[in-house]
Length: 229
Length: 95
Image (cartoon, rainbow over all chains, first blue to last red):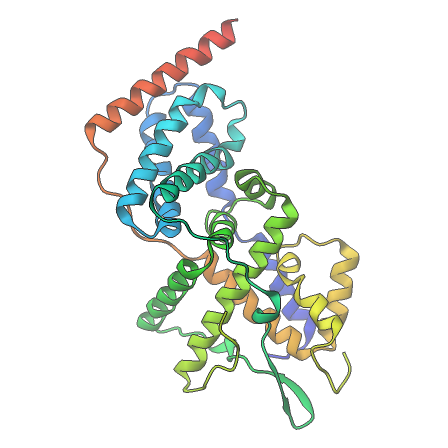
C-alpha cells in the first residue's frame, strides 16, 4: 500500500457503486406485480422476502427457530397491511420495518439485551514508530487469502464479527451493507435520523474491520495490539 | 500530515468520516479535504484501504442459510390475507 494516491482513490470510488441496484429494481417490479394481482407474483414474493427476512432475523436473533417464526409473523403482517402500501418502489424499507418490529417482539419475549455503545477511540488502530515514520499497527490487507478454504474461513470470521456486533449496530450493517438499503431507507426502517444511521454504520464497519485485522495478524503469527471492545 | 505524525486531531476527524467518504455521501469540499489529507498521510490511506476491503467483504457476505419449507397451512393463510388485501385495494380504488 502507500502507493500513489490517484489510482487508490479511483478504486475507492468504486465502493460506492457496489450494491444491490439491479436486484432492487427487480424487487420493485415484483412489488408492482404483487399489488396488481398478477399471476405468479404472490409465490415469488413469498419465496424471496421470506428468505430475506429469515436471513435478517437469523443474524439478529441468532436462533434458527426464532428466525423462522419472525419470517412467518412478518409475512402475515405484510399481507395484512398490503392494502396500505402506496409506493411499491419502497417495498424494501416497508418489509424490513415490519421484519424489524417482528424481531423486536420476538426478542422481548426471550432476552433483554441492554444497548451497548461502540467507542470510536477503541476502534482506531494504535500507532507505532518505525524509524521516525509513523506506522499503524494493522495487518497487511493487500494479502487477503485467495485460497478457497481460506476464503471460507474469512467468511466465517465476517459472520462471527457481524453476529457479535451490539444490536443497534448490527441491524444498520445488515440493512445497509448486506441488504443494500440506502441511508434514507435504513433510517426509515429503524426510525432514527440519517445521521444516526451513518454513525452506527461506520462504527459497525470499524468493529468488523478490527476483528478481521486481528484474524489476519494472527494468521501471520503477529500479536494484535489493538484493544478489544 | 506532518512527518512526526501522530493521531492528531485531523487524523481523528478524517477517521470519523471514512465510511461516508467511501459511500460517496460527503459534500465535494469535504472529499477534497480528505483526499488532500490522505495524499500526505500514508497511515490514514492504509487504514482507508483496510476499511474499503471490509465493506467489500460485508457486501459480498451471503448468510447462506435458508428457512425450511413453508407449511401448506401457512401458505394458505398468507394467500387468504393477500386476496383480502387485493379486494381492499380494489374497493379503495373504486371509492
